[in-house]
Image (cartoon, rainbow, N blue to C red; front, side, top):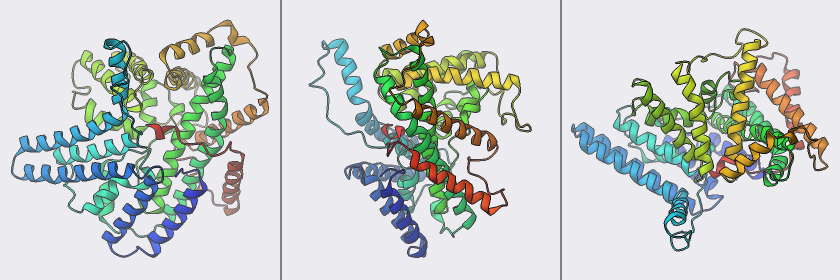
Length: 482
């Protein structure tokens, strides 16, 4: 069930009405309802996925209780064993579904003359498995670290793991933030719900109007990169940068806005990353929930920035390579992660990796020349990385880059007879960037409650709604494959 589908619109309306007007008394009853509708939402793709998420939830719930009892008896070794067991089980499931065939294929190519037919298994990759697995792992680790008391109410815990707005593509919530919200009976917050609807509308604009409008040309260009001129390939790379941003940040906005309709606060996942002045700032603004997860559960336990410079660089490579692997079983994702780690090294060596922690041009209407230069350079570096992310093979990505940096860069771009559509898409991108620049100090582009004139607010709403009809059709979300 896609956020940008009629089915989800009907589903959301029905769930909203039942949640507030039927299941409005009794916390356990309401959480059971959340579990039921979340499982319906997830099972819409394939009912077999439900067995996996239920098993993950049960293992993590049981491990939390076991860890808590062991810690109460000063059995830290036993607690560590229970925590490690749950981590091992969940990672084993993730690796089986996501990485097993990849590693078996690589093994066969090196030691079995490339014949991996006897080693491979036919498995469907469950939607969003990386997201809810990491969410489950954070719970066990936080209980072990005594940051959170073990959940004793199984309905609250199952609702936390399966909460449908952020189930399949994040944000990857921490148990310390989201789980306690299932311990209380929420009361309807009108202002929160209105802001949630605004955020859903802005997320749909970024997904349906911007990302999906970019998708048609991106797909064609990356499928035919070996014959196209560098000018066309450059357009394809730029469009993919805005496609993946509009697609993923749009999903996050819809998820956060939907959660607000039910009284829940999810963490911010994007903060205008393409306005970043260096690569360090970019990664503090892109997919925040995943990056902070790796920081708290991998980078800091390895020593973080408190160790020598060489180890800091090592730790940086570890988290970026893991981030690449998290995205998929492909060498292109590993190269993408390694590429960004390399971009980080100069910042670490010069101790400037946290130079920009404020909002660009926070007290000014326009950025300075130095800020514009930093944003342009950072964006170009990120676009190069996106080519590896989008390409099927490393050699394909290198060929793509080589053709961009050739004399064909000055050839007339191939428009496939849809030059008008391309110009319209570029116009939508400009609109998105302009709105987010104006709203860069706020949580999302449609945070326009400060506009006192009701007619002006509604004019903006209707303009966004009308723009949705200019989309290219219902496209799945890119991050569903992760």
